[in-house]
Length: 276
Image 1: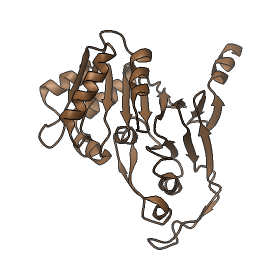
Image 2 (image 1 turned 30 degrees about the horizontal axis):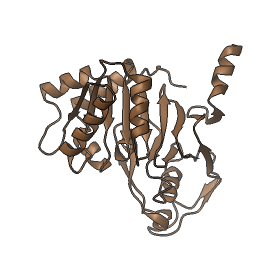
Image 3 (image 1 turned 90 degrees about the horizontal axis):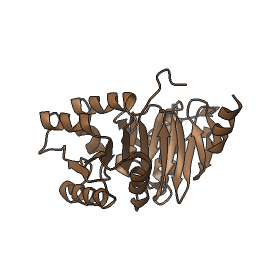
Image 4 (image 1 turned 45 degrees about the vertical axis):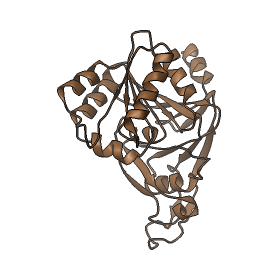
């Protein structure tokens, strides 16, 4: 288990319609005066995307919703940005290109403050699509269809590091991304793969408890019991063999514990706590 209890909450959505995610943030984690920062770094049209999310949050009654541009034209570590990051109760990363999020935020004071606050404060850090993929310490940014089952076709890089030892992938079932998530886990078997279908997501509490929400299925891929693989033996582009890669399907009402590699209905934890 984590030595230090994390007070913040991560929420990741697999893309598609995000009304359920916004409603979840509003109803379960916010009050009237909550301060929301939408971070538009991934978006191809940041002002349009930021304004749309700002309006959506405000329609839910969160009048202190704003959007923050950090990109080629807007540096991260300005005094104003640092103050806004220290003040926010909710951070929301939009979809787009996850590599942009990592490129423009890694090594910044903005990201360092967000990481520190995620541990010490009861804040929410949420993302949809690319914004969800970038939340972990490593992320997948390339790998398509059957080609992803060949050595070297799935590309990964470092990301934002709010959580460690997890690969999060979005649009998972709709875009046929099982192969690339499985290959990422096969290469890094200490990691858990979390595949999010559209309209489906996870709430991660205490940096460990992954609970599903939404209309579809969350795919969990566990490489901790891999018996053998030819990954280190074959050439680039060759198909990869993996023995004993484990997989689970979470739906709303179920959770997965990262530290214990434990799958259970969400009510089981409450039952166990009542018995102690």
